[in-house]
Image (cartoon, rainbow, N blue to C red; front, top):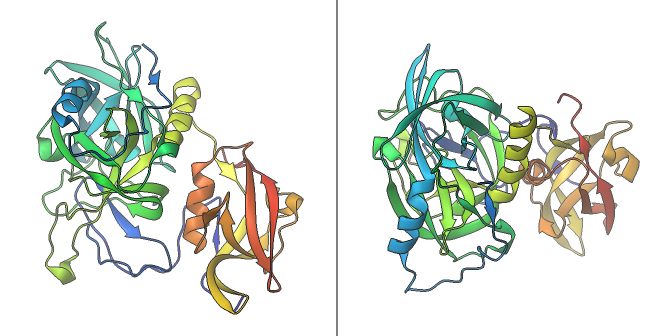
Length: 379
C-alpha cells in the first residue's frame, strides 16, 4: 500500500476526513460517499415475506396508482414530543401486533410518540427498541386496532440499478405522499448525521452518532419527514426504509430539499435488526476486529483503492482468519471495497455468525480468505 489516511475501527461508526459539509432538515443528510468517487457538496399478521416480490423489471406500464393504493395503508405518520421540542417522521406497519418500523433519529429522545394511520386514526406508541448504529427503531402501538395492514416485505438482493421504485411517507407533514423514481445505485456506502436546517422540525430529529449504511440510492423524491417511510418496488414490496437525502450546501445556494439523491436502508438489514429489537429491545452487530484506513494497492500494474488494514485485534475474527496489518481489502463477497467506509458499510450490513469472503492484496499478490463474523463486544 502506498497511501493511507486516518485510522478508523470497524466496531465504531467513524469515517475519514469529510469531502463536503452536509446538512438537511429532519431526514438525515449524507456526509460522505465512497472514497474514489467525486463527492457532491451535500446539504442535507406477521410481516408477509415474498421472495419474488422484488424481481420487478422496469416497465412504463407499472400501475403506480395500484401500488400506492395497496401500500399507503401500511405507511404511517409519526409525531414526537421531547424535552427539546417536537418532530415528525414516517414509519411502516410491520405486523398485526402493532409494531411500527421507523428511523432511530425520528424517535431519539422521545417522551411522547403518536402514530397516525393512513385513514387518520391516531394511537399512542412506545419505543420498543432503538438501534442508533443502523438508524432503525421499532415502536409498539399502545392499543393496536385489529385491521392493521402490515407491509409486504421484499428482497433487496434481487434489486438492479434502473428498477422502478416508489417512496411513501410524510414529507414536511404531508401524509401519504408518494413519489416515484428508479434505483440509482446499490451498495452505496454513505455516512449520515442529523441536521436541523431549512425549517426542520427540532428536537426528535437529533442524534449525535453518525450512521454508516450500505445504502440503496434512489431518484424518488425524498424530503424531510420521509425518514422511516417505505421504499417499495413495482410490486409494492418493501425494499428499504428511507433514511437520508443529499441536498445542496450553503456554498452552492443552500437548497434544502430533494435534488434527486436519496438513500434507503436495505430491507435485508432492516429485517435482521427489527427482529432483534422486537425480541430483545436491542440489536447486536457484526464485528471484524480491525483498524482500517483508506489505502491504495498495486496489482498487475494497476492502482486500486482499498480498505487498508492498519491493525488486527488479537483474538478477533480477522485475526483468526489470518488477516494481517498491511493487507489491502478490495472485495467482500465479490462486492467492491474502495475504501474504509465501504468496508464498514459492508460489515455493518451483516450479522454475527455470517461467513464472508474477503479478497485482499498482500505484497502485490491477490488472495481470498473466509472470515466468520462475531458479535461486537459492546452489545
